[in-house]
Length: 226
Image 1 (cartoon, rainbow, N blue to C red):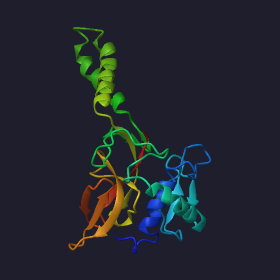
Image 2 (cartoon, rainbow, N blue to C red; image 1 turned 135 degrees about the horizontal axis):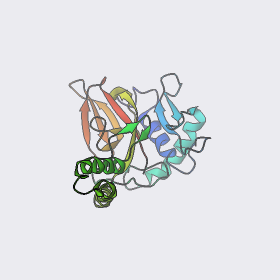
Image 3 (cartoon, rainbow, N blue to C red; image 1 turned 180 degrees about the vertical axis):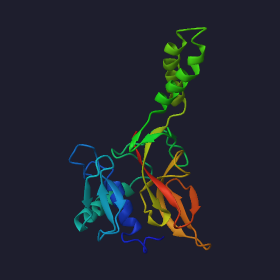
C-alpha cells in the first residue's frame, strides 16, 4: 500500500508519529504518557490517537496534522531516521539494522510478564526435587536464577515490548512499530509499505530491513516500554 492509497499519506503518518514522540505530544489525561497513533477507518484522516493502557481515544483532525507537519522539519534535520520511544530516546536493544531486541514472550492482557520472574520461577521448579538432599535449594535458586537473567540483560540489552493488537499488513502506515516475526522477538518501525509485482506488500523498516507479506496477513503492533 502506497501513501496515495492510505486515507492519510505516509508523509503525514510519519510526521504524526514523530510528533507524538516529542515534547509537545498529545498525552493521556490519566497520566499514562503520550498517546499512540492508530489506524481508524471511521475517522476522516484515517487515524486516531489512543492510550494503549486505558483506551482513551482522540480523533486526529486537521489541526493535529498541521501541528505535526510544522514540527516535521526539525525531525528531518537528523542524519537518518531512527527508532525512538515516546520521550525521544533510543530503546534498549536497538541494533545497527534498526530493529530492536526485546525481552519476554509472556503477556497477561496488555501487561507483560517479566522474563526475570519466569526465570526465577523456572529455577524454583527445578530446585524442588532436590529438597530431600538440600532443603535450602528452593530458597536460594530463584534469586540466583533472577541474578543470572539480570546479568544476561546487561550483556545483551533488550526492550520490554507489549503486543497491543493484530492488524492486516495492508493497514500499516509509516511510524508504526511491529513484531517482525510472530508474537515475540525483534521489533521494527515501519518506514514504507509498497506493493510488489507478485501482489504481496513489501514492508520496509527504519534501518533498511524489508519483509514481504500478503496484504491480508495479520501482524502484531507493539508498544515499546524501555
